[in-house]
Length: 70
Image (cartoon, rainbow, N blue to C red):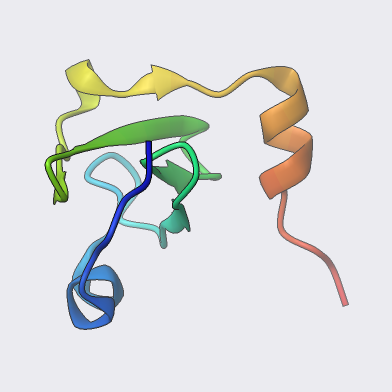
């Protein structure tokens, strides 16, 4: 699955749970909220920003998306 989102829309979207930034994972077709440790699905190029539709990140994904310090 590949997601195409308008960059302007992506810049406007925030996690509905934390109000924090999101990371687009085009390959998985998801928007990742590192702070909430959730992945929101993108269906038919439309982000589904409902916490009940999000899936929890795996431990490996949490490490992958953890913000870099520096």
